[in-house]
Image (cartoon, rainbow, N blue to C red; front, side, top):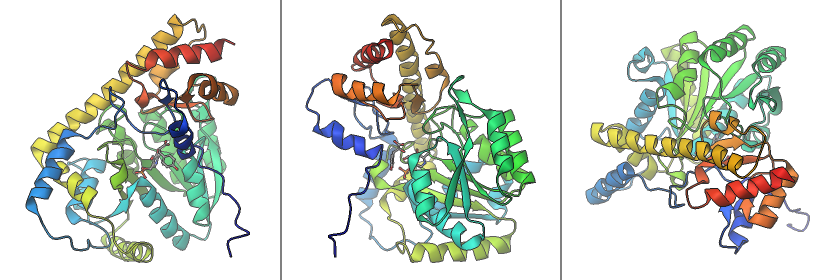
Length: 398
Ligand code: PLP
Ligand code: TYF
């Protein structure tokens, strides 16, 4: 039975962890996977999370199944976080939210649901995008194409190319967008840019699908959600996949959500019933722990304030590392202007390192980055940044 099975290609990002773990050089640094590490190189356990978990353990409650769409208090809190406490959408009866197995699970639920809904199964993702976007939609039965996004000259967004690319897609295509902290480039759209993107999508009857996996890592919780809010105001139907993996540092607990903006209460009811069918035939119902913890934090004023503070600490530390890296690269003799690293946002920087330079970083310096040149700035700290800057300088100069 299994003899014809061939080895599958490794995930270009997760596969790096294996190589990193197998490396026994003490100076090794993992700039591959998108995980926030603190100043001590550890995945932090947030104090707000810890407090919510202690309360949950003390409660010693039973562990029944959750409903298919997940914990109600969690789903409601997700909606408030995405659209803002003042949003009229919250009381509109038009929102569907289902707790999901991380942001990945939300994308998969959305993809499976869209597959049933649409005749034209075409999804456009940014060039480049998170590798899993393509694989996930292809696995769900879609054709996946790209629209122009990154401009290597400016290290920012090629807005005109993007608008033109989206315009040219067949009418009614699904357009996948990153709300903030674009993975892998760190290049984001401005408010004015979003307005233009929404305009094209609306004119072409495309279906917007927004992925927000880094809310709070750009400017703050409100401003990072501006794209969602503009889309919602435009009256377009909307798919949103969201994740708390990074913002709560709850990677392994798999906490995310799929939220849909429908056009009426009736649409909401039928859409929710179909989404439940997708859930039922995949995993019946989601796990409890992460959603309980996040819900406890989001629904408690003090814990919320504590969480927001901790999120700001993570964001600020990443910014400091960005500036420090730019400074240290220059000090190490890199003459090329690297200040774009400071302008890019979120966990990543598209460093401009070539595949060969990335390979040298791993071979000669035990520094692991993605082959595309993406580095996870959130993995830098005062203990490893000199080694990283000097090594990057060495491969950039030769
Ligand atoms: N979307 C993007 C853009 C991501 O970078 C990630 C990262 O993990 C995800 C979705 C998936 O999030 P999760 O780990 O919650 O599944
Ligand atoms: O881009 C990243 O590094 C994170 C983590 O298949 C990740 O989003 C990477 C690859 C993958 C799943 C998660």
